[in-house]
Image 1 (cartoon, rainbow, N blue to C red):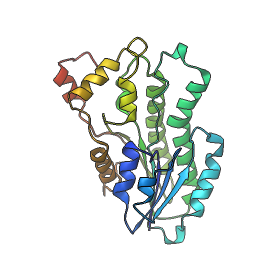
Image 2: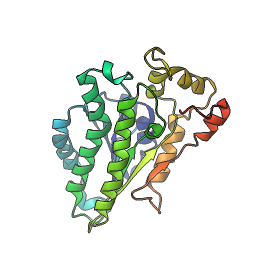
Image 3: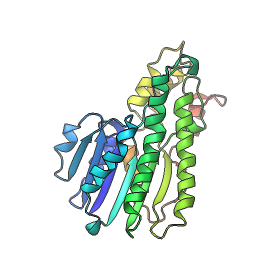
Image 4: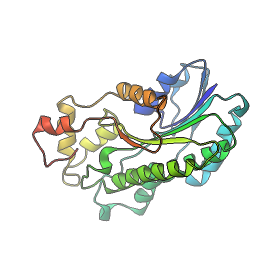
Length: 260
């Protein structure tokens, strides 16, 4: 059996990844704040866990529960997809509350770090295929006023992935780890960005233009690319991989000085 731990499966990319991974040989452990009943109805090999990743002090207990559901003696592979993410607060940093700031960093950076650490601890002595995909963002290099927290958290996730890869090179039972930039996708995060007040988020209009031009990828298409990458024979351990061509967006709008 192959086991998949996937965060953020209530909608968007996470939901599409889970749907495409459904198989008699796969057991899915899905995590989100709200249960996805449509997803649950599609397979008996899904354990759904309602959990808010902002509760970082409870993540260790969460992973204990997850590994109680995993038969390591019969596992062919274990895969963690850190997909859950939040863009809020979309605001200049001096207007963001302490609660909003910590919530963003908890979900986008601290939760993936903890889940990664705990997966490695739980599987240290098991010589099976183990892979972690951290879903990052090209916001690491494409910067917008009002998105400093999101960009900083994703940059931290990329560096974390690279450093953990170096550590795993010294392991007798290594875990492969990669950070992926999935591109511009028609999800709630994109919708939230383009619907912001332009006075507080000047780039809202750019996000709207990309949507109107039909240049957003679908969650289903992106999920397929991510899954293909997850199972690659030549898994690019330690890499930060961009699977979207942003140059086509800039060329379309003839805006070399704009970043998306």
